[in-house]
Amino acid sequence: MRTRRVRTVLAGAAALALALAGCGLKSGSPMVDDVVPGPSVEGQPLDGASLTVTSKNFSENIILGQMIGLIFKAAGAEVLDRTNLPGSISAREAIAQGDADAMYEYTGTGWITYLGHAKPITDPLEQWEAVRDADRKNGVTWLPQSTLNNTYALAISKKNNAKYHLKTLSDVAALSKKNPSAVTVCVENEFASRNDGLPGMEKAYGMSIPAGNIKKMDAGIVYTQVSKSDSCLLGEVFTTDGRIKAMDLDVLVDNKHFFPNYNAAPVIHTATFDKYPVIADLLDPLSARLTTEVAQVLNAKVDVEGEDPHEVAKAWLIEEGFIEEG
Image (tube, rainbow, N blue to C red; front, side, top):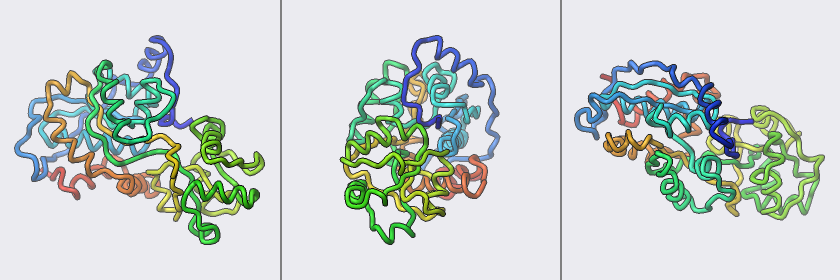
């Protein structure tokens, strides 16, 4: 199961304690980059601060965690890098308990996994506001979200789509009724059985895909099968995955807004934010520049081209003018 797609809350303090015990919160490396703020930041407003950044253990979230750390470092803070923690719960608890100060989290994960709501809020801004308000009692401060939305989608190769001209999931539903044998789908095991996955999507769009047309496999294989074989017309993807562009796939629009929004937003341990409210001034402009398309490009550099997440984050921040070499 993909760690970023944990949708159920671990029950009880004992389970959380176990998660924390195994997450390696006492390890980490100081960021030693010689960087200074870009032109929009005067001086080093975090001079004297000692801050810890964290992330979950998949490429995108590691890149985003590195961005926060580098911006803090450029602003004068001593930064401890504790990114790449295993799973959502360990990183979440690090922020809530104050073992880490900042990371990027996803609004859907906050609303469903951590706060325990069964249904997402369709409007992205309303969902972020609801998460922000509800999480205050947990010692977690949510800063404004980006438009980077790492949610589920179905994709088709451009080669195959030249025949079917699919643009939306409603188009898939229409095709499934007109020609049921044409709609073959490659998905992860979990997505095939979850209410917020394939079964729920079929219900929302009024389609019924024959069981023999649903093929279950590991996530990485889905992209290859959709791109390079005829065994799957459609495949489950994540909207910010760099392989979408690299493998020339068309992402179909969720025109009924079935899948939850997973917009990335900085989350800060509240006591840290109260002490250093300038963090918002440093990170709000970053979130404003982060889009789904930007994430696809940066993720591809790591997942397709094999580059280091720290160097990918640093190069992009320099290119965008957020930091400069010291």
